[in-house]
Length: 93
Image (tube, rainbow, N blue to C red; front, side, top):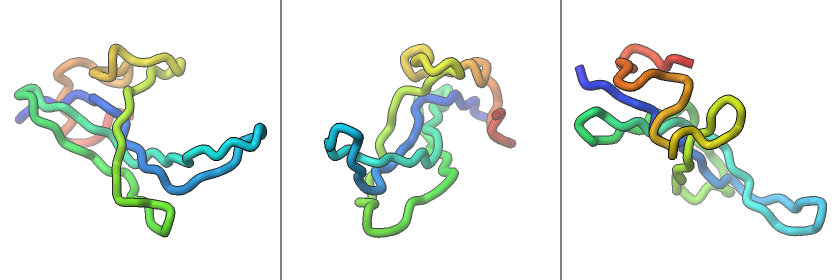
């Protein structure tokens, strides 16, 4: 079986909100993880799908963050999994 490694966090804009300074900001919701196969291909594992008028149908991808909040190795791998770990059965976190 092909090996997969977490590559990017998948998120969607579901609306907007106003911050304390009165600036309008986008409201994001995490919807899953983009994985990269060892042959270079990609797979998107969805944990949720937003609904409603605030979602425009787009999914954005962001660098993964380590558990301490810092970017994790350029978004190619996190401390949550080992390189080449077989993730076909279940997500390891």
